[in-house]
Image (cartoon, rainbow, N blue to C red):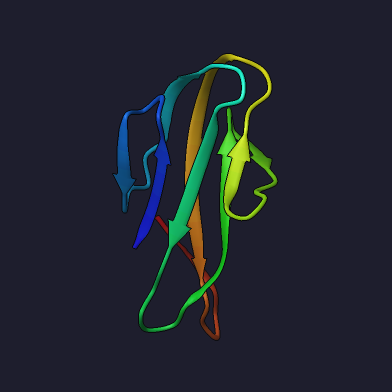
Amino acid sequence: MLRWWSSTVGREITDTDESYTVYVSDNETITVSASDDASGIEKVEMTLNGTPVTLTDNAYSFDTPGVYNVKVTALIRQATSQKRP
């Protein structure tokens, strides 16, 4: 289960491989959580406008307001890792 939340989206986004266009203001934060009961999660990744960003404690804080295309994926832990939306 992959979840991410931003007050700019105004709702929780769950298990999707879609990206979302959001407007963020100063000091906005997107928080991400992921779980997989079978294998566990190796890591969570986020892109903004197609560019990977670094998550700190599964969150990303914006310091520049603007419109961003946000996509979050989780890498499940397995012998052969695969991305899970």
